[in-house]
Length: 512
Image (cartoon, rainbow, N blue to C red; front, side, top):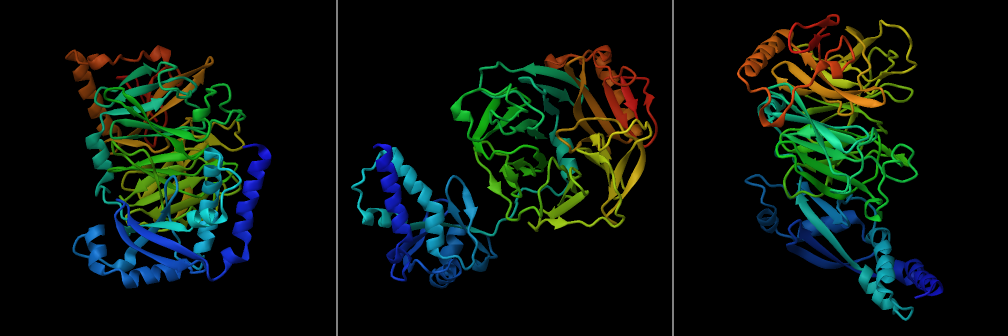
């Protein structure tokens, strides 16, 4: 088929879509309702100008409740008005029950597919008009009971502490990653063969998070013209259309590409919400992104879902934290104002734009976040300062989530770069995160610990005992010499409390 024939066929289809006959009340569509397990529930023919609201009302009035109850299987309580409706292309997308018509969806959602099939199958220009009409007039709708997240832990910090032995971090601009072993405070470097899985170097615009001894990586967009990643990109067309979502098993070091069809974005952030969810929030790609993606951490999951509510505005590299086992907070300070949004995951609530009561200007951005024990506060650690000055007395800030107020802390600011911004609980009242420092054209790993210094001292004693019993080098983990990890006072592991920087006497610890 030459170019002229292609243009001719596309013109024929466009003429059909715009024709009076297509748009008339006499045009019909066959609507078929399925469960997510592809069980047929109901089908009927409707006029093309039927609204989605009228269609759903008719469906609910005609399908017996016991049929819906049987196939949706939601226990003793069941309300058919809490059923959600979806359409499916590459993924399931929620269908808005509004005044859009069936024709609106047929044109917008199926037209591109029809043209693609014509091109792939090289359908000749003799294709009859009624063939096209019959094709586009089948409309599948999928039904699912009201969404709930069934695997939310009642104590998320305790869950992470009890189920986490290894914590990982990709190495910036290399094919490799670090593994931190919690009970021995050891760090291990793992290299990846360059052609093993055709994955890209990890870059600063990618995102990652830890979950149950796995490291999940969501690549930043790998368009060749992107100056951030162009020198690392592999020129394989199979990997140019979308971003890869990668899982690394930190126990056996197995790497698996879970999907190559995640949407393109940069400057996004990820957070693990126990027991099984990863929320992907913020980012940008050509235009603002308000959709929040959710990945469920199970073995056979190669796709994602969308949170049913959009962000109120664009967030670039937001700092994410869970509070009281149900509230997800996102902080962002990349533009003209400091932004705070939150939602109640347990109730699947919309995102609320939080108004700061004491409207102050702060320069800290792209920071890590950690709870302040028993204070109803979230502390911001590291990141960058807008209009960075030479003032050595710069302080970190904190947010009181009971009063919605911001204020400066007495903790000195240090330029720690956190890509995974959520600090991970490793013991009660102690949190950690891995960062890298650029020194002599190389990135050097550091462990940052925030929390209760007395509790940490107890951990240090236990680690010293392990070393004296000959267990320090177990399972291939090597101790990290502090002379190779020089940043402050030549120490490799650093910790925060509310005082000044003071070197610890054991295990290369620094308490801040």
